[in-house]
Length: 255
Image (cartoon, rainbow, N blue to C red; front, side):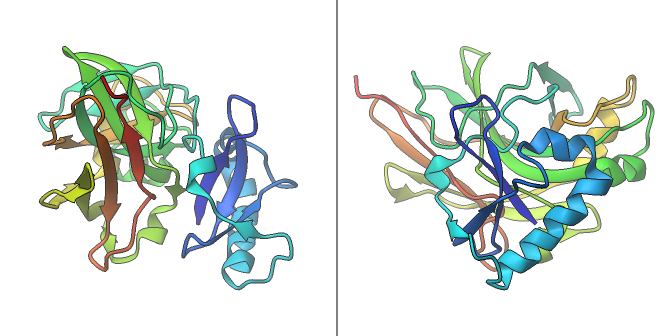
């Protein structure tokens, strides 16, 4: 299933289920209003959301409406923590505040793409298979840094269950293509691969994780130099060209 959090004036937004083709959405009211509620009680609430998604995909919901990515916050705007595992196995931690997919950057920054896994409860010292069992949802995130300091973490509009990724998900590994448009010009796409279960197990090596923490596997630095007035469109796509998590679109104010 595909989930998003619509802006409603609150800090966490309102949970919606999104159709597989990204054309329709439906509020999850009556099941849960916030994604954190679902992560806290996944075994009970997730099957109900799955049923809602099936009905939505078959056009059986009277109150469905057109999905508008511009209305989305990050799927989980306030996580219980954000940790990124880099290519060498090092771990960086942050508070876990995620900006919307369309929030402008205040200044030019260097970006790092990350496959972000939203987790359920995970015991300390869990191995990779156990960590993969605790993985609930995936999304795309970008850490933005100025002079090495993290200034923002931006998330794509959708958090999806791994099964929604089709051929892009195989044996606990995501294989996809990172597509970037810089000022409307397409950059050379880059094939990326990540195993979020391994990243979760590494972060949980010394301490337990609680439902609602987010752990990322680095997909590498973005090879884009941003300047004032620039725009950037980022999207992870499967081999068949379908978006994995919706696009991150940002602009920098003109000088």
